[in-house]
Length: 557
Image (cartoon, rainbow, N blue to C red; front, side, top):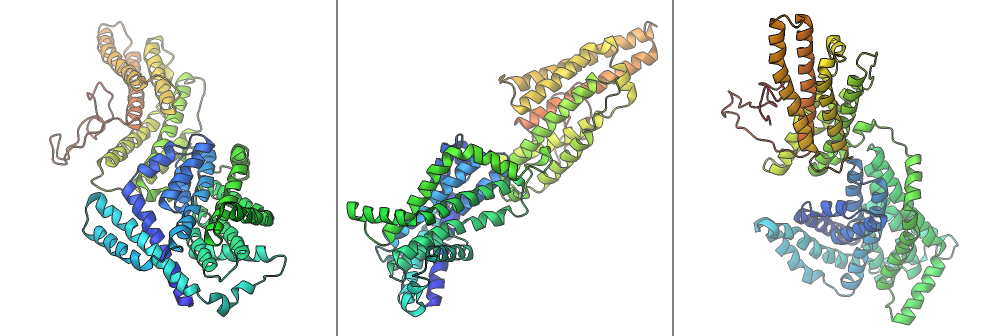
């Protein structure tokens, strides 16, 4: 008997895993993009979490994805809270599936062909047909598992005396809720726990009151997966896991307190609407108390989110707070996290550069430069750990663009620690135009990367300002050298000004290239044995001519 129960739970779990993994693989990035796109308000986030969980039949999978999105900065914490509430309600879908089909009809034998068809599709199919094999086989395994559970549960009440456990004491609901928590923690799936409870109720191993308390415990126990995922993760992951625990625990406690009232409501529905007793009524009870929790929590998501943020304060450095190693398993999310961190680091570095240029001769020193350099090195290390398929060209291009940006950022940090001679010449009136153009480039680039400008052509403006400075340098260089040769200029001053304007040109150039790569600029891939040298290195981003400005290499990649 115990072997059959364990085997039934195992088959059900395997079926749920196949459905979840199969649908996620078949949908590709669509689920992730949809989850992120439709999470503007708390209500939209709630609906998004509910629908995705109903589709993939795993609140744990949705919650783990949300933890990754929050860690990467793709979702705000309040949006993630809404998704988590929706996911908790969405997981009731598996209970309805079991009640309506798995227990009402004995489909185990008839579902076996689905397992065979799904296996053959996975082995022999192509494209989306191949992807459809997993969820189809999983769908069949669910009903095979339920049939096995029913056979194992037959006589369980007599053999184990389940129905009489703590039946007549006041704390019986709490006792059964704790048993439900333990069952969910052991199986690591609230869906499997609910299926087991529904089967036990269907076979009369437990009564309805006991099943209701066990269901409450299963809803609370599902938070164990979030807690495990948050251990050692970022602050954002810890906050999301805490939100999941708070909602499910509060909903569970509320359901325990209102259990007599909720049970009377179910009894009223049975008499008024002819609702069948047993599993269907239990599924309605499960949905009802989680819906009640959602209705009470949704209007207060904002204040509760702020309270959790104060309770779990941010301790990671601001520029690297989104670099959570837990998102490395999803390359798309990891690249987005890296891109956001690079944009924030670049914008901060541009502001620091403007401050240095404005206060050059007044003893100004920005102690944050070491912090920026450290953050850039951490981002570079994070990017080096991202793995993606070699033939995934869009992801490869995004990865290369970010590596280009890191290269330019590191060069810019070195440029911003110049010889004092450069700073000494910045007050010279002859450099006022070059200094203004450099400052404008940094200001435009920083505003664009932060999204603080409504101008869709901001990147073009950054490029044009940088190229104008390069043209100014080329034009004035010849004039200055001619004037020096004719004795109109002091040679030391002329050479110092030329060196300083070249320095400003490089700062402006790197700001442009950083903005270009972080805004999705095109990148050319050269063959290693292509034209451009033995290693195919071309353009200003290569090792040849890479340190120069636009005047030394036309339109580098």
